[in-house]
Length: 126
Length: 126
DNA sequence: CACTAATTGCGAATGGTTCTCATTAGCGAC
DNA sequence: GTCGCTAATGAGAACCATTCGCAATTAGTG
View 1 (spheres, chains in turn purple, brown, green, blue):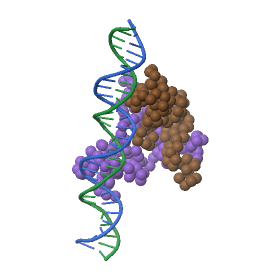
View 2: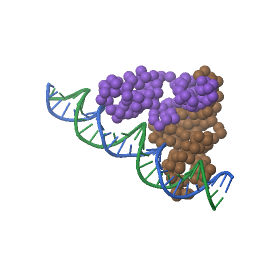
View 3: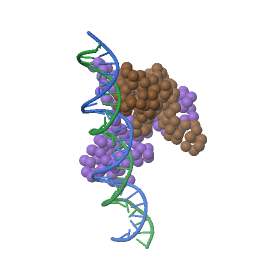
View 4: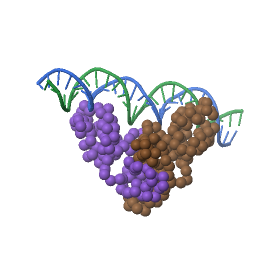
């Protein structure tokens, strides 16, 4: 653990959720002006491999990252306002119990993503 | 519907599943040597917007596409051999019934993705 | 046919991510 | 401490999937 990595991991944790690499880079430079983008990406890879951080491919061209939480959680993506709503649900248990194809599968990670329109956007006509 | 689009949509349908843009381009050129990559991408966008095709961001740098099927389905991704296993399960129903955050959400699409190791790869020690 | 708008092919541009390489930091052995 | 070694860093160039710009072609309509 180097100075840069500690900083980056802290920023990811305190951000709460769904940082992208560039935003992380910007925040990191406020505290340590010389960190490089490469370091950000390298750290993200490392954290991902160590299981400290999870990578999400939402519908944009770049990725988002968030600190791994102990609890299994999933996402609702609103197509109207772009909001990301998190919720918890033991879907992996539901699936291993109810889906034959999944019975022999050793699960590392589970994510359900639902796209659609949140209640706000439904009211305002999409 | 132009000649190119018909060809591309047919190819996507007959492929069954999980084509990427480059593979589609290669197959298209076998039948129509002058189709361009741009046309492939433009057609994929169009099909996506029309709801004929769905785009998946698996763990690679590029996207995969498949013809929209009537049935809700999900994916298991094996980290060992890279295999993609599809299964069907009415998870959106399960979620709207059991998750408060999802109750007011108007769902357009649902996908569960589970990563891990398939039974084969578990046997051979990942 | 003739006209207009939409689509295509091609090559160049974009932009997020990865790589290269020279420099610097961390660290154990003397 | 300081020598030597390895791993990590910063900066910029390279990469590559995807998108754009534009001139040429094609569809579709009257």
